[in-house]
Image 1 (spheres, rainbow, N blue to C red):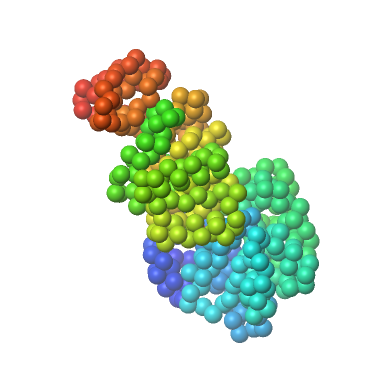
Image 2: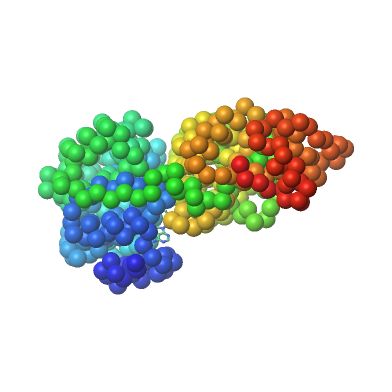
Length: 420
Ligand code: AMP
């Protein structure tokens, strides 16, 4: 299917061409006609599927058809999203797809002074993208009225629940006009989210795309078994590959993220961390520097990174293996966006082996094991190849399940990769 077949107007088609989009993603193919028919929608889709465009494109088209550009500027569309990063990315999407239209939008979120946000609101906008806390705050101060909202989008509803925002969401919904179109997106549908959907949607049409585990199929995944103490060196080694132009590195903790940044700086690799202890501004700056190519590595914890959307992110490195297997899928889903292929490396130490096995069970596919690296896990008996100076080549008995005969065969065949 093409965007043309979705009956989109010329200015939007041109914008999509400028963006380099060749064809709609499955969620776009399904959702755009429903939204254009002005039906309520329940979309089961996570970030990375193209869901933002699935609602932003038809919303822009509907507003344009209603001559919104010529009408008095008041907020006609509200998009509620859980994090500042997502809010900014959604704002960028409206700007990109609406570049040839004259509709106005603004993005508001907490953690920064409200002055410039209030100014933008006062100038008049058609579309408001907001996180719940700042929205309620500015509503309380009388800067925002929701009485003219014709379309309400609730984005990442399950994350709203995870992050403790569900009551704020309900307070916002209570202020919306009853007569409106509602688009509800959630990656998962826990009972509380299903209940919320039932209360705010009217005869919704349902669309669902690839459950999280299948996203992993787009990504070329490899694992390095390595001792914990050698991960730092292994990261330097891996980053010697010039093909890795931009890499997102995941750690389990904020402290761990800061430590990786320091280690990379020592070997002159540009890096910044993004995690909950950083101020909103520092996080945003790090993200922009990363997007603009000013830094090569962005080191992130899971909470901070979920939802990060960077075009052309070729590599993700799991410096530490996540304890929750689904987190692995979310992490590697930062690359391989909207059908593009990406590469994910995981550094797994002995203690993390049970977590790694759980991940393999979840994704139900094989992952390449990279044996030819200079820091193999001592217990696995992998040969040290290109060892650092003054270190002898050692071979030890195998301790990693399944790494015995196949591994020696691989070595004999000169094949240093095998599947798990
Ligand atoms: P989302 O799921 O909305 O976070 O989108 C994920 C990424 O896919 C973003 O970087 C979009 O720019 C990109 N994208 C969305 N739709 C398309 C499309 N039809 N073709 C190519 N890339 C797309």
